[in-house]
Length: 82
Image (tube, rainbow, N blue to C red):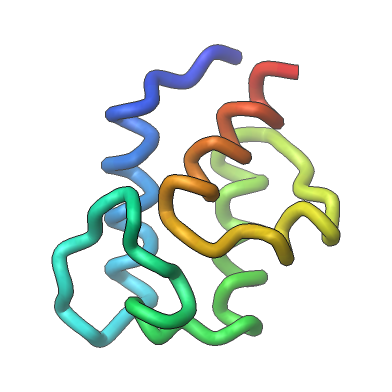
């Protein structure tokens, strides 16, 4: 499955916004934990939602290396294109 980077970013931004109460505008450099104040438990909930949505499987070690929205988009594209 090939994923368009722009539409994937939009979908992920919507999902992250729903889990964040900061109200900040999400850009690729936005840090998921530090900027959006999404804790590790919520991050894993988000990862599970993304796995279902894009029919992918995140290795735990790969999920823990994701810091920014850009990292998350790149990881999903990589996993979906394998």
